[in-house]
Image (cartoon, rainbow, N blue to C red):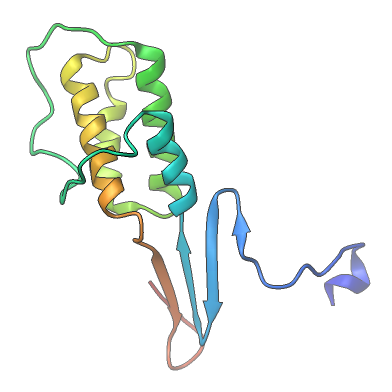
Length: 141
């Protein structure tokens, strides 16, 4: 129906788009950003890091007055925001918290960013999975 109204090509099932990989079949769609996250880990020299089992410590605020490079901090947090928005809601709380320090990041905040990166290293295979309901009208995530 769309081909009749618009000039377009059918490229088949969606498999990769904007750093997100899609796996479809049997009434489900899985989305992950394994490739994108590997590039992020490499970019920030964290690909060989030891993985963590949690995305953050309970607190990241400190009295530390040791500033870090704000440009590098913003690049890292921006990369995390993209991952969080697309396929990684599990890092939403900590990334939102880290975003509050974009203007003056301190050493403690950079350590928290590295903690998130270490968590992502250990959870590269995590994916969002959406399934059809039995009635076929709803979507379960």
